[in-house]
Length: 373
Image 1 (cartoon, helix red, strand yellow):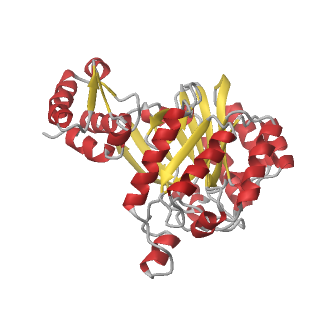
Image 2 (cartoon, helix red, strand yellow):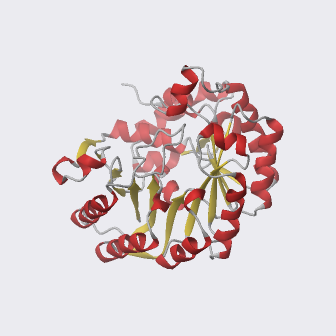
């Protein structure tokens, strides 16, 4: 099985915290869609005939496209790629682009999973983040999505905001669980180098963020999720049983995927390539391919460690021994012993994994397990 990712690089405006590539304008949308269809067609052999089980529209703001435009892209993908009988097809959406009529039309295209960027149910948080919707519209979107027939829903929330506190964050979680949504992606507010909010904080025009606030909110989040029966299956992702994002999980399991659009990445199991992060350059097929790298055994080991430590599935030492090389499983287990003694990683049978608290330091733990000659 494999996956397809489509990057839609347009937004109504740039949110203050966003570090993803996008343009706050739609003037190149029609030309972009022509180029995108050209890329989808031209690269149909990349996955080697592997069946596609997940399709993901990310951005940017994919919900700025009309239902007809999204349907046209899905029709083209179905024409050139072998699609599984019941694929997971996700579309990221901003509340300010949603209406009941649009969601009903979207459901008819084949989109069967929505990831809605609520971020907060409180207006002071939304204003700080530079979001264009308000809390009332956010709640309306959830009702509309259910009315339109979407039951596989995910919400994004952001914690560690200086405009919030423990009580307000807890109320955000109350509203999420009361809405009976099966999936939650919750992210600590981080400052991207070129983001608007980063510059505003540096200039003293916005309140600074606090690591202590983020840690407080993360602990509240983990406790509430466990109480509500949600599985903490990745650092930032929680779900009811069986409702995890199959597309995102494929990244953590090293499944091949192809990415279309500016800044999109592709991976065939041994090599990675990525497109240029510019709509203008992407329109020229000759400038589209921005880079390529082939991963050696050591790099594949490091990636496996880094990605699997982010998840509750953890590192499978037996799989590593059988599928990679025993030298890697031996190295990993040896390097893990002092980390186990320090309480920074846990081990059960042939698995190494991180619990809720340990997940906060996944990158540092991974570095200690990386391959070194």
